[in-house]
Image 1 (cartoon, rainbow, N blue to C red):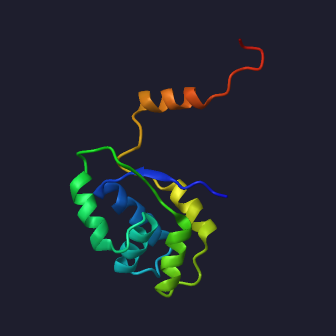
Image 2: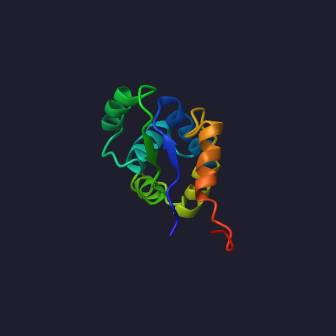
Image 3: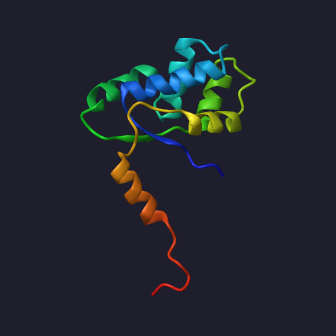
Length: 122
């Protein structure tokens, strides 16, 4: 099972994810990409996502996961049958977002916390 890539929930990051999606799959229309991304974040509609995004954009560090299965399912519902969940997962992992989840110091701290202890350490 793939883990879901996460992003800080900002207008800039959502726009970067949408741009990457449309670059990889140019047949996906702009409004369809909006609706599919909203579904991948767990919203029923793009309008519902916008309501929350307006409240948290840049004022809070809200991380949100991209569910690549929901993204693929919504794209399928919108008529895009050639988009696989695996290709979406790979794409979402590769997206470079303008507002990173961690600054460099925090990223180093998180990496250190996830690093396993040596077998002979006390």
